[in-house]
Structure formats: C-alpha cells, structure tokens
Length: 158
Image 1 (tube, rainbow, N blue to C red):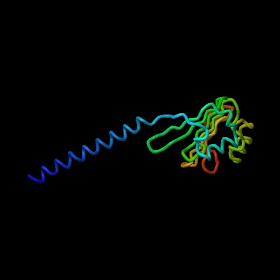
Image 2: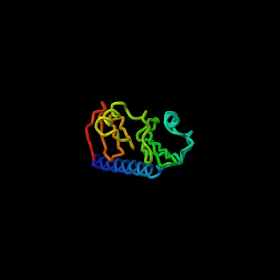
Image 3: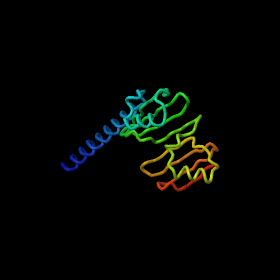
Image 4: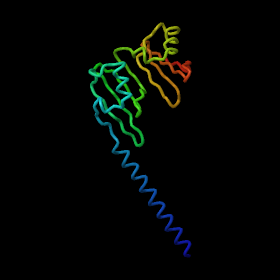
C-alpha cells in the first residue's frame, strides 16, 4: 500500500512538472516578437555585407525576430529590397523587387547556368539554406531554380 501511494505521488509530481515546463515554453514563445533595431545593432558580418553590396543610407528599417532559441535579422530598403540574415550575420535571402541581386552575391556556377540556359535573365531573389547546402534563385522571367551544394540544378519551377 505504501508503494502504491508513493507511485501516485510521483505521477502527480511528474505531471505537474510537465505542465509547468509546457506553460513556461508557451509563455516564452508568446513574448517573442519582432523588434526594430538600428544598423549598428546588426551583427558585424551583416553590416559588412550591406556596406559591400548596398548602401546603408538607403535602409528604411531593420528588425530582429527572436524565436525561442534563435534570432534572425531583416533589413528593408527604401526601394523595397529586403535582406534576411541569421544570428551570425550570414545572409539567408536577398530579395530585390525593383532591381537585380548584386552580381557578386551570386555564385559563379549559378551565373554560368543562367547565362547558358536562361538568356541571361536577371536574378531578382536568391536564398540559401546553409545547413542543407541548397540555394534557390528567382529570375526576372519568373522561373525559379534550386541548386544543390555543388551548384547543380536540382529543380526548376516555372
């Protein structure tokens, strides 16, 4: 009988602990929001990327997006262009709505594929997943290409 009461008590304690952990995680997730930041609050690598390929004077606003265990950064320019960075300041996506992505950002093998097979269409958007080693580009013709880590085409969406 003593063991039975002890087991019931342990189950109640465990259930209470699980409920508290789930509640705490939910509360933390609910407080995570976008927050406006200054250019200087971006990671140094992101600042350098913007200085090398864009003009910081053309920034409309920047924000940080805090998730439970991660943070991303987004920079919007007055012309509508947008860049997303990861927590280390590595670019994840460059979206140029009214212009083309700066040529220096596009890997040479991707540029070669575009010039050979897509009539030198302009790259309007490029995104990459560093963990998976994939890069996606959207061309001015509307075609979307997906490349593997060796920059070989693995998918085409028109």
